[in-house]
Length: 58
Image (cartoon, rainbow, N blue to C red; front, side, top):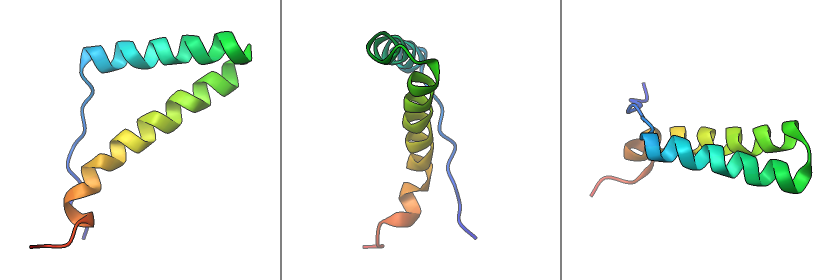
């Protein structure tokens, strides 16, 4: 079984994600595009918790 480590977001990171959302929304004028962009970032960050199992043992 894969052991997944928990990933938490600092307040600064959450503020950055909000800023990214606003910038993408301003450029695209589309909430779905901006929201999807930020959700993909969050999903990728959450996969960092899998990192210990992805690298070969040394």
